[in-house]
Image 1 (tube, one colour):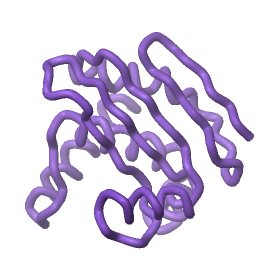
Image 2: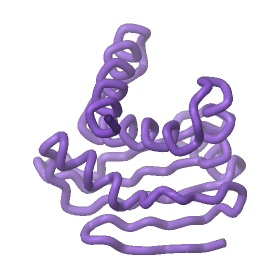
Image 3: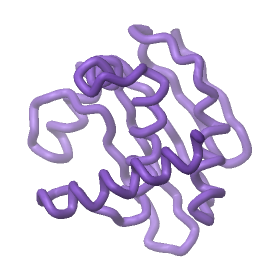
Image 4: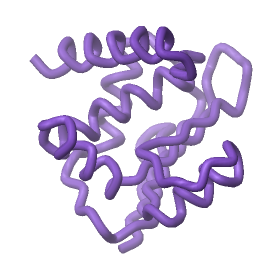
Length: 144
């Protein structure tokens, strides 16, 4: 099911048909960005299958596994132009692993992706812990 939509400067491309998405991703992204006082020029969010995101992960990071999200900040300017790739199937699997529901996990992954666009890293255990603390804090503030 391809369901592509544009909302302000956010474009959503649904290139997977495994998991139905009820969350209004555009609205939630705008809510996160407003909360973070983050200005962006253009954000494109593409929902991919496990095979497609595994290929992207291999092409850019030499890892042959599906992942929940891959984010690219395409400009070093103050206003971010970025691409976010999400895999709803992996996010769904992770929701079971972390004992959360799918929508909660999707929101956390969207926050995580925005933090990556802002320059946050999670390559080391210390960076991962810092980023997880930030994303959980933001999630709790937005979803009280």
